[in-house]
Image 1 (tube, rainbow, N blue to C red):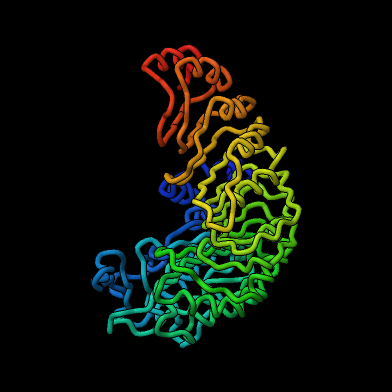
Image 2 (cartoon, one colour; image 1 turned 45 degrees about the vertical axis):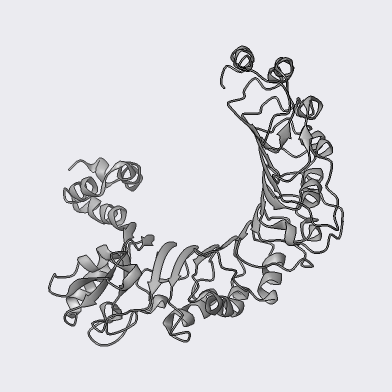
Length: 451
C-alpha cells in the first residue's frame, strides 16, 4: 500500500464520501485505514446494530402486539447471558459512536448492557454527542430488566431527543426518572433537549424536569411536544429559569401554559413558540427572528408595554386582532419575510383594530415574501382597493392570502398586480363585493409571469 494512505488528513478527506460498505472494504486493505474506517462506519448508528453484532443465539426480537401499538415497534430480549468476549466486542464498537438513534426499537432488555461479572461500564458511548431515543415501559413477561438510560451518556453529550411513551406512567421512580433527574450532572455540556410526552406521563415528566432542568446551564434549545396536544404543566421555577437563561436561543413549548407576567431576559433568544403570553414578556427580545404564539385570544390582560422586535423574520400568531396589531407595530422596520395572522373574533370588551391600519403597517415591510391574514367569517370588514394598495411596497411578495370579504373590479387588478411582479399564489375570500370577470386572468398574464 502506498505511503500516502498513512496520512491521517487524507483519510479524513476520503472517508466522508464512502458508504458504510465501501468504508469497510477500504479499511480491510490496510491496517493504517482500519481504525478510521471503523470510526466512520460506527459514527452514526441505530441501537439495533449494536445488538446485532452479538451472536444470533444471544437475542431475539418480540414484535409489539399491544392493542393500538400493534406492529409499531420491537422489543429486544435476551436468550442467554453474554460471555465476556461478547460483551467486550459490543464495547469495541460502541466507543466509536457519535450519533445513536432508535428506529422501531421500543425497548431493550437491560441485561444486554451488563457484563458477565455483573458490573456495568460507566458509559457505553463515551464519544456520543447526539442521541434520539424512544423509551417505553415493557409489557411482556419475557423482558427481565429495565434498561438504564444513564449508561448511554457521557460528558460529550450535546443534543438529546427523548420520546418517553408511557415510560414514567407506572414507574415514576425507575431508571428513566433517575436519568432525567441526573441529566445535568450526567451531561453537563447538554445544549439541545427535545422531549415528546403523551397523556400517560406528561405531568410526571414535567414534575421531574422541574428538578432537573435548572442544572442544564448551557442549554441553547429546549422543545416539548405532545402528540395529543394536551396541555403540559411546567413549574414556574423552570419557566423562570428558561426565561432568564442567557444561552437559550430556541424555546418551543406549544403545549405549555406560560404565565403572562413572566419576563424574558436573554437577548440571545431567536426562536420562540409558545401558548398565550402577554406583550410584556416580549419587550426585551430584540434578537428574536422566529415567533409563534397560539391562541393569543386567551390573554386576559393587555399590559401595553413598549415592544420592539427589530430582527423578526417569521411571525405566526393566532388570536385577538388587538394583539396581532401590536405585534405588527413592534415588528415595524424588521426584515419580515413570512407573516401569518389568524385573527379570531374579538370578545365584547375589545374593539377591532381597523384592518386598513394593520395593512398600512405591514406594507412598510419591503422584504415581505409571504403574507397570510385570516379573519372570522363573521367579520364585517370589507377590503377595498385602497387597503390592498397599502401593500404596494411589498414588491417581493410571492404569496398573498387574505380571508376577508373584499371589493375589487376588473380595472382594479391592472392597478394592483404591477405592485407584485413576483407573485405566484393569490388566495382571496370570503366574498367579492365587486364586479370581477374572467378578464382578470389577462391582467395576471401581463403583470405576474410567475403566477
